[in-house]
Length: 199
Image (cartoon, rainbow, N blue to C red; front, side, top):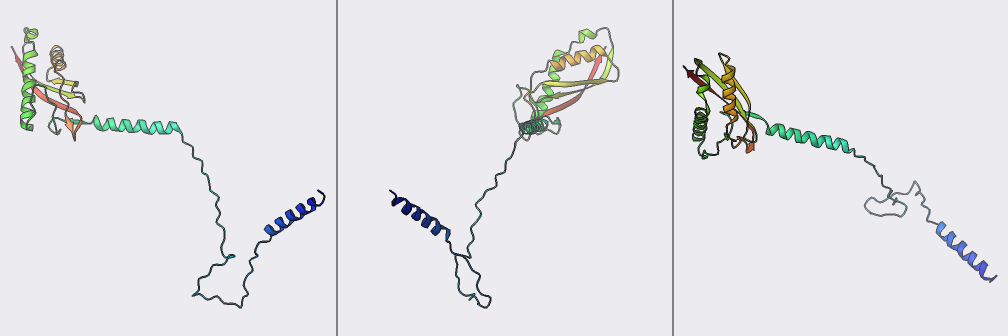
């Protein structure tokens, strides 16, 4: 046992010593010249690459991401809720009873149905005692869902009862197929004049 210990210690020392003796690179003498036509790689010319990696920590703030998403949604609805005049919209709003055909026929059907709706639902009996001869300007919007919104009624003479009656008729309009621009539903503004003569 005593003889084995020095042998183990000596072998460990030799092992450490052999690993410690690496080849030492020496600079060549200044008076020696390299042949540029020969490709040679020497052990001392090769340098080890640094394999260390830089780890960059990024922090994401969820609140900012949500704000961006919300703003995108709002911009999309702004594009959809754009207001277009009836005469300029690509596809006009339609009554369900109108059959879709050429634009000219669609406009004709729309105006005919509006006129029919007004003549059917206007109660002239409410205004028996009054003499009314007025040109009334009516403007309303048809929203993205085909509902009548933002009604405006103007006339030379301000008749409150007449304005209420016209507003009631407009609210009784059926739901339309919404107007479309580039295949997307848009708000369509429609206006017309209504000549009213009651005696």
